[in-house]
Length: 206
Image (cartoon, rainbow, N blue to C red):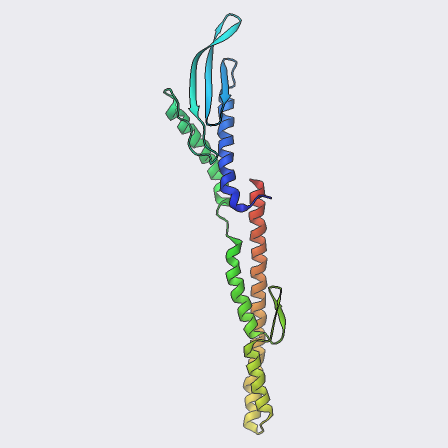
């Protein structure tokens, strides 16, 4: 499986292959002799002489590197023509693959997931799983438990009213926020998986 980080390298090879194909097709003639070497092309034009042809003119054109860059320089007067054509081929490929070379990095979501799980851990009412690891009851819930215990040890209408009107609703609010944060974390995890599969799919396409 190809890594998404390899995409620029693969695009470079694609450009080189496309230019190779162009050079081969442009020399598809009975009067043209074509050779491809590691770093250059050799094109010879033949002039019919009886039953055979004899080379009359040879041109050496530099070949792009594995990154798809360069090439097109000749030992004749055709340098600008080849350089322009090679750049044109590269531009067409860039237009097609360019938008897919800057996809979001799935690893960046780990920071936001850590924030979500950290908050969920503070708000949690009991032991729960966060990112595959058990997390104990949160400090806020423990503090509310201690307040409840203190209230139960006391008596009087004011204390009862404080517990019913403030502490009980506060526990519900904390639980609601904790559940919202848990959904947020799950959403981030789903987005990360989606982006990761997307980048793998793009790399495999290259």
